[in-house]
Length: 549
Image: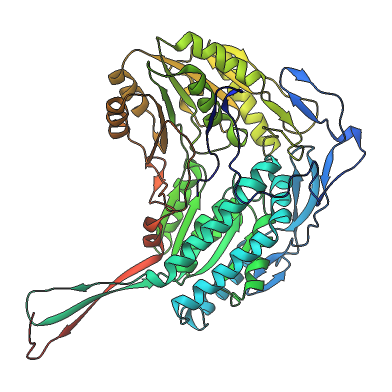
């Protein structure tokens, strides 16, 4: 299963076909059954191409019920200990759609106590691995059953296109849990030969209580990347969702309860980083912490873990991924793939191809066509069919992105298109393209996390390797070439955790993901992720009169 996107060639029609991956698609209807258009023209407009405004359309408001807004602790939904709540917003309008329990240190304490008791005294670690896998498989079946509601909540709270949520991310979410359910009864140690008369075996044991902190850009997918391997290995969990997007994690917790997960095995606390997140990272009874988010926050997590009980840490952090278009590239195809690599998910992707290096031979043609493609990008209500780009997640992120665009203009990069707010309400930004970008500009160095493409020129392979590797990040890279030798040279020279050749954002459940340098510690997904949630114990027993050694 390929996550995010499959690229299809149809040159007779429209060149490189831009599409989201369709996995077990929902029935094709103009308006899904759980979405309803409501007459409220003041709440936004409909579909726009960036260059041409369409007629005023009714805003589509999902009719899905927001049923779960409390913490999920020890198998029950409970209010915050303080009684406080915080708002969850619709980024299309900036309006509040729910109020959610606001977690702090006391809520984390309650959740950790429940997870510790479930691990030390409960049935979960003592179940057979096969029994644990059956619960995970039942959960995946429930996700399929409730795909529509989960996709609507995901898009409503995050602003990502509904088609992306329903047709790509929800099937991937269920697939990830089925993948890890398959691993549950295949985790085992080794028999080790040793010098002398001893029998030596290794045991792979669950690490204990795992603390997990997930980001707002892919709430459900990050939930699966964290929770799946931890459960397969027999751990218990306290998960803190992002304060911007708390709704789908709570819904998923309810489905796990329905699937038969024992109380205390999975606990979900909503709240912000400085209070709930810091309390989880520094808790003395948490055995491991896993975090996905910014590099700056990752450093804080690592420090808190070290200063408390030296808990194990995995970090999936920021990126500034190079997308390298070589001189032999077919420009039309390269433009379309580079566009997807950057603008997918409103540019809010840690591995976005945000440094587009283009060989000088094809640079001018590439820039003109990249600009033309950005001008045809469909921006609007993410619940409307055909929309490619919704709003940024929040007012804070919206202002941050506009600040970087201003920096690009002030540093003398050429603003080819975009650069402004889109519409008058919500957090929409015009698809933006800069050319003549230099490596020392902020837009070429910092993780913008928005719909801003920076196009840089290079002369030869040695030069682009050196420049691409200069970044403090090392998460991913894209290469576009027809030359196998060039692809091999670049893929081995680039100091990144993932290299995509003539494709981008291919995320199979079995493909490991993580970064070099300041992009993180450890790997998620695939067999490599299991080691994040296991301890290795050596057991040595004397042998009396062995027949063989």
